[in-house]
Structure formats: C-alpha cells, structure tokens
Amino acid sequence: MNTDWLAQPCAALNETARVAALARQGQLTKPPGSLGQLEALAVQLAAMQGMERPAVDRIVIVIFAGDHGVAVENVSAFPQAVTGEMVKNFARGGAAISVLANILNARLEVVNLGTVNDPGEWPGVVRAVIAPATANFAESPAMTEIQLATALQAGCAAVLRAKQDGAHLFIGGEMGIANTTSASAIACALLQESPQLLAGPGTGLDSKGVAHKAAVIQRALELHRANLVQPLDVLRHVGGFEIAALAGAYLAAAQNGMAVLVDGFISTVAALTAVRILPDVRNWLLFAHTSAEPGHQRVLTALDAQPMLQIGMRLGEGSGAATAVPLLQLACALHNNMATFAEAQVSGKL
Image (cartoon, rainbow, N blue to C red; front, top):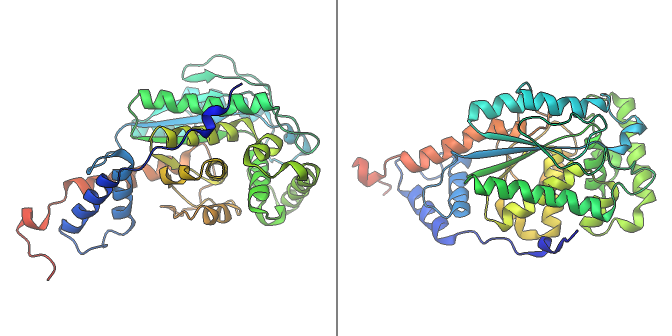
C-alpha cells in the first residue's frame, strides 16, 4: 500500500486571520490577557480556520478500535474481549464518549481496525479490519509494513470524511486493551526514556502490575532496538492499529487544514509520532487535558503543549477532548460576541 501521501506538506496557518483575531482581542471590553488561555485559543482557531471569528459548531469524533497481541503478556487489568464489547457499547450509545458526543451534538464514528472477538456490523461503525490483533511486540514486530500503511490510511480516510462533513474540529479517540503498553513503548522509543518512568496503571494495574508492564516494554525495546530510530519504524514494531490510525488522522488533518483537539496519553503519543513524521503537524494541534497516566506530562512537554484541563481523567475514547470542547466554544463566543470599546462606548486603556 502506498504511503507517499505521508510526505505531503501540511497546510499553512492563515497569518492574516491570526493578526486580525489578535487585533480584535485587543479591542474587546476587557483588560488585555484577562481571559487567559481563552484568548489564545480563539486566536489559534482563527489562524487554523482562516477566519477572524472562528467557530466550533460542527465536531467530528472518531474512535479507532484495535486489539493488541501484547495483551497475552498480562499487561492490562481487563480482558481483551472488552475491546470488541466496547465497540458495541459505542454503537449503542452507552459509552462515556457516546454520551458526550450526544451532548455536544457531535458526529461520532467508530472505526474497527480489528478485534479478537469481532462485534460484526453495527450502525455508526466503519469496518476497516486489518487483523484480529497486532502481533505480540515483546516477541516480534507488532505490524507488517502493509498493516501499518493500512492503519495510517484508515486514519486519513476518517479525516477526509470529517472534511466532507464540514467539520470545524476533529477529535480522535481510541479503544484497545493493552494500548497504554503500546503507547508507553512508543513514547520510550521516541523520547529515549525508560519504561519505569513512562509506564502507568492504564486500566487499573497495581504497583506490581505496573512493574511487570514496564519489564515487558523493556524486553520489547531491547528486542527491537536496532529498528526504533525512525517514527514509522517505531510504530510498526511496538505500535497498535488504532495508534497508527490516530497518527495518520493527525497527519491528514494538518495536510487538509483541519483543527485537531488531542485527547489523553495514547492520543498524545500518536500526535508526537505524527509530529516526528511531519513537524508542521504541531501547528494544527490543540491539547485538551493532562491525563492521570504518569507518562503523559513528559509527552506533552516534548510537544511544548499546554492542555486546557487538569481534572484527573484517564479513560481515553476521546472523552477528555470532548469534555474540553465547551471551553473552545466559550472562547469563540467571547471572541466573536463581546463588544469592542468603541461599540460599547467604554473608555479604553490610556
């Protein structure tokens, strides 16, 4: 499968819109900077959307689901069957992200990239099955080159569907038992950090479980050491279908000029991978929250990211990003609807 599209340049931010939005912020009836990060977010969105007055009304949330071969190493507190079962839960509207999407009037799509217990056809679920699971990366590469290319393309295709819908904002989420193990392994490889620093409880491991998880990741890193230099090779050797799809989605969003709101630890690791492939992807990323997963802050620091929320979330599914959407909407409402000093006939700064 062709991966030439990965080298296509990212869209440029609209400097004219950014300057106009910044000037508007300086004219609104408030002391400069008094709305804090809400001001910066409005200006960022203006540059991304090419409009002095940005909007976050049309939101597309895509959950990528895939199982991991490394689950056989007992690195998760939940059984692998949960991945396929949660795909059905998303489709039925019972998951946290389903509830949040409904509240936000966002379009929710699930992309099934391969689960051990295949849930079959469901409304709102796109079947893009690559294999029942990746290989156990503690023993062999997680994916073949064709599987990696297919997963990346699935992410790109989801963004193109969102673009066709006229989305103002793209949110990617993930579901896959053992995917914090995969994300931690990717982060270790990209940041040259130890698993003992980056591995966390995931679905609820105790300290003994976390230590075992770190040992499994260490084993994998040693096995694949010679092949963990380029980001695509890192993805192929220790990644997951859904993490690769997220990386592909972030790359495609940046290439197509679409604003992205990044979720928690796993999504941020995918974002770091995308940025390592094409550095200008970073211009199109907003960050929702700081996860309770211990490795997340290190990945955020590597991306020079300042998330909007810090409320101890670690669910995944795109739920933290969905929770932060109202802040973006408020940032736009304030930016677009507040009166200027001239309009309100209020004396400005001397």
